[in-house]
Amino acid sequence: MSESVYLIGESRTNLDNAITKIFNSFYLAFEVDPETDQILQFGCTHTVDLTEEFLSRLFVGRNLWERKETLEAELNRRYGGSSKKAIVVAYLDAIKRYPALKEAALRRHT
Image 1: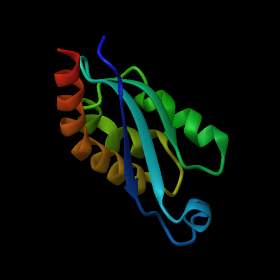
Image 2 (image 1 turned 45 degrees about the horizontal axis):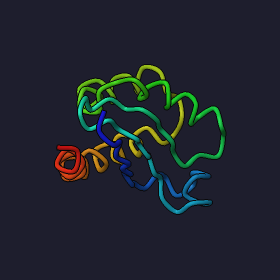
Image 3 (image 1 turned 90 degrees about the horizontal axis):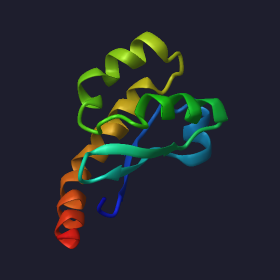
């Protein structure tokens, strides 16, 4: 296995959301295996620990790219928090950064 990479996606959520009041932005963080694109670990800004635990189960062990196809529908079906859109936007922001990190990691590994 090559070295894992770490990427963050950022977005904003509602002004009345506690995450916005405390952190000013919403962040999703991913540790990814660049050889397989598998999400190894996940973290996010949150005010309730269960939020991070729940979202972690939606991401960890899955392919970073495959989440793009199903994330919004799954959040609409299963997530009752007010930051649904912020989660999707932060995820999309993170995957924009991923190709350059992946390429650099794989280049170092060979």
